[in-house]
Length: 295
Ligand SMILES: [Zn+2]
Image (cartoon, rainbow, N blue to C red; front, side):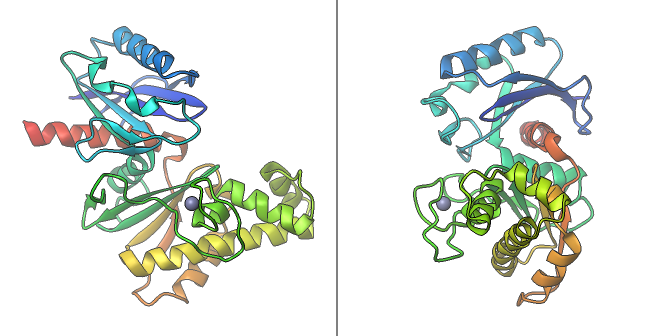
């Protein structure tokens, strides 16, 4: 049985575990805070690799940012990781084991497709990770959609005309409305208060606050608008929502609205199975597939 030492590198924490080729987590998932410099990130990974060096066959990494089509390096990283993060030489973490890197949302969709909510759904899946931002992973005819440079699935397409700034530097992208930050900003408009947080909105919904309910409904409506476009373009068997914000979705309502407004055959919108572990599990499964191709 093959084993991976699998990492998920995000802006605030790095989680890692040993995972077998059935997707089982063999020890506890360990977590460290993401160091502030690229050198410290590399050294932390190197120490972990050395500690577990006799226990794995491959190193796999799920990361924020775009990854090249060869899965060897990061092309561009996001603002929540240190400057120069994309220059880290991940391949040198081990002299004798393969190192396979993939974007975190792509790893999530791979985990859901192989073993999670998308397992019996079909060969075409769109996954959205709803967190502080929005990530995307797309499977077309059983293959991960990577695009010409490896960056496909970025959820930056315009859905409104309100001049709301987006993290990418442009305006009114899907991410600016469908993310946790999107909910927060929609709530700030509705409450007419500039200090409202996402946490406040969720709390107020529980108290039946009308403004919070309005904000949550508008946020879900915005999420649906993007899904309608994605469903019409990719005609997926299912759309999977994962990430910390996916638990606040009314799936019945969103399924009805989307399916009433698409031009392709009916699809199903469902919650992801793996929650926060889809990155490390998906990276490992993806890495094992790469090894198989070389045997
Ligand atoms: Zn954008």
